Length: 290
Image (cartoon, rainbow, N blue to C red; front, side, top):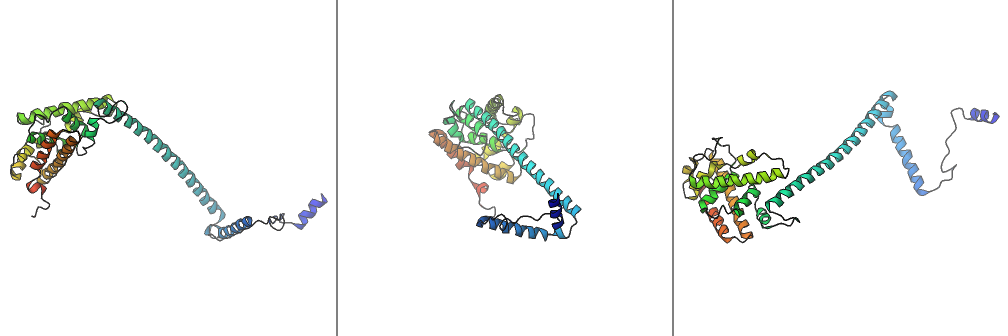
């Protein structure tokens, strides 16, 4: 008891801390560096505005706010990781369904090996490749003239709204309406296969994307009509017509390449001729001022 009172008398403000070097004899170079670093950080902390210009209550409030912010940031990072994980799972499901569609349509076999249809589809990126390939392998283009083929393909790239909502093909000549209805039939087949494979798709909306509004104009253009005459057959502005014809020419070129890849020289020749018929006059001028 006397010893404790003596210690209390000698150190009224509390027991001094032991020096790790002098008292504990820790004389390691790495430890000395860490000790010096700790001392430096302590001095910087003591001279910081939070220690000198702000009272203790405000300092504690700010530190607490920072800790809460840090905790919420950790929670946000965890939620982002979880969201990415869920998105990956959803994408895997979608990819599995798409693979089933390709298998049902004959683009790949049961082992996932790409077939002739699949190689053909790989060449197409300007329009819906599934429907285009169905047109090719159903033999729709075989009995059509070059002009009819190109006019039919215009339905794949023309995205202007139709004036006649009930029957967009109303008023078409029989040599154009016949191929168009075959296109719609094959488009419905593709849509039904996709729906059966659990792909979220509205059959009517999918089919309505194939617009015959430019068929007569394209047919006339391939027959050599002047642009001003062709424009009268469309309900669009001149710029929209030119843009559509350029997209159409790109699609025709891709089909020529696809036909070559599967060894169908007859179709290749037909589509190459179609590209030549499209690529003329003001539509493919590099400048309208020439």
